[in-house]
Length: 638
Image (cartoon, rainbow, N blue to C red):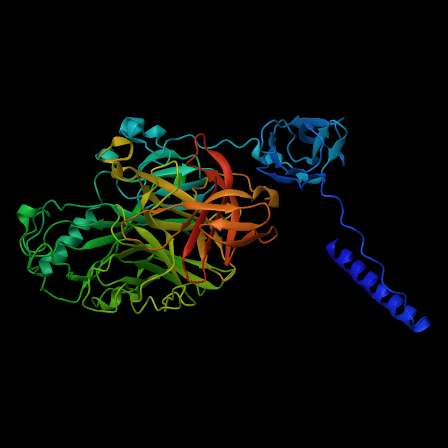
């Protein structure tokens, strides 16, 4: 009751002042002030305040200080604790022998309040320090089991081991819930090409977003006939010979529930040269660009059935250059196609309109309105005008068609009233990073954290995922091409993407081809921006966080953009007396109701998470936020 105590002091001061004035009135000749009392003797034993930290389900660390300027000899020092206050030597006692006045308690009961204090016994007496109370963590964490699957899954990467993959071999994921399960679909990509020959668009399911069951492929090995037919019909209109056996890719699906139907849009690029129709190899280069990509549509009423009906073409790569598909060299990147028909994302806006947002590199990202009944465009008669409206690009120049920007993912958050456009930047093997911008309208303009117009070509900030490394692990690179989804039962937002191990991890020269699926929680800042939590989601129970758990050593990462390089964590210390040192300086404070931890000038969202780098993996505290300058912050308690 601090307010009561302050009021009590004020009343005493006012009463004291009133008495003084009354005495002066009654006796104007006041007596001289009394002589000050002599200072107390300095030869004493003083036990400082007890600090409690590292609180767990069954333990806590106690730290105190001892100053002995007396002639007495300290025989024993330590701590006593009990369920009652104040504890004595008749209760539980732990003694300390070394110079550090610290002890780690164990064997405590979960979610239980304890009283503790330091003590010393001398050759003359027993002295106690101030009492401090703390509560052990709730029992919700006691039954938690951390995921045990290895990040380096190379020993089980073969097709015959697919039942053990969990989130191994995930690239460009998309997630939707159906019944009790979340279903994840992905690009055709696997370590050692283990998937080849078994179909396309691998998929898996999970009840908890932690443990995933690999189910197989969503599309049969033989692709839909419309792709080749449509390709060669277009080539025929341009006076080009048909391609007998196109070289297909199977990339970046997106799955969404629309009413009682699930729609899966998929990307099929054709990797043959336009002029000759030959496959894209250095030996076959014919001074032309490679062929267009197509986005198709499949539908089902039940994801569990994996019974998809292919609905044919939705859109294809559009050009504004007619028959001028010449390319002077294989190092020229001024693309023939204006819009690149890959990386689809689907959203139904607040007016009930359906939009396909797609694009990669080339001239930017476009939003194309769809017919809700068919899931396809109303018209593609005029190329490229009917193929969409640009909503983002990385450069202001219309002549730059190699923008290192792709994989749009778009959502609407009703709590903030904004549409959020997530974008992947740079090459995918190492430098891949995720940016986000927002708009009140699905077609833009989209603005970054700094107010810059992304639709007009400004660079997008903040960076919300980036290659990184905490201590004790190789870290991750290539963390992007995300899907963003919300659990319909809990309302929690999630971010899923791939992550790649750096080259030569565990002595493996090909470890960068190890693509692990990452699922992370998204939280929202006070000013309505999404932040991605630094550690992967593991289902750690969301029990309340006490202030006593926060003090200690942390690792902090500022996600400043650094192309192709990991951001490496640096040490951060939060002291028991609320001071911050190391990567950030100042003081700290915690608002448990808002879940906000203040670190100097920064405000971050504090949550429970899993220390994936620890061995064994254990629950810890994590935070994420955005600085006033628009730089994302990640942190993890060691």
